[in-house]
Image (cartoon, rainbow, N blue to C red; front, side, top):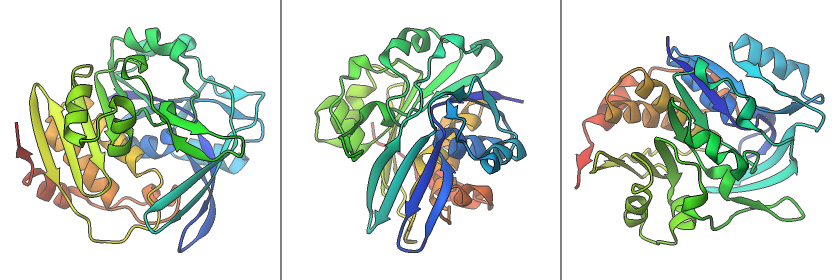
Length: 295
């Protein structure tokens, strides 16, 4: 069985949307972790949580066989307040836990490592370590690009592409690609990023996904008409499904189709959207059969 390590903060999210108000465990280790477990992989989480971390969430991690490593900090757990309405998401940082240092990670145990910070908790000082991992690596750079003002309000900031860690795979949103490359055109921005990464995945909400691999560019048009009231963690779910299936040897376009299908078929607020899995392979086949090689 494939062994994956996911690194980034677990968070406690106070979520408000048009349907619910709910407190939920969150962060890429949880969303991507459960998604990877559902793809029948072993998942370890390299994170930091405080002594304030609720016992019910510790039990939740154990119940879902998500193994945490080197996780306890004297600082309180990362917390967010998230308000989502009409395709607009407001992210407010309430507390940030201790930074994550990867020098203590025994990376030899894993077939792949997913680097997915949410609050600048994996600093540039770790880049050399990440760049020298021998395993397959994937980066979701959202946490590098986030900037928080004195009130905790989040905005994306410009970030030098050369200062991101160099992994085998990177997944970016349209907004993130602009901040990294200063290029407005989404596809042209992804082309620039592909000069630094072997595999590039670019997502634009539920409309268009691009895949660049081995000097080929693929376009996936997949519009999900169902209204989503809670999009929190959907990108992490895509990461987990795609990366785990890719590591298992699935063809890259099929692995991505599975990731898109799973992420776009989720219902529920917070972590509930991934706790109950439905069969999404039929949707994945529709996506896969609609992939176009455009260059």
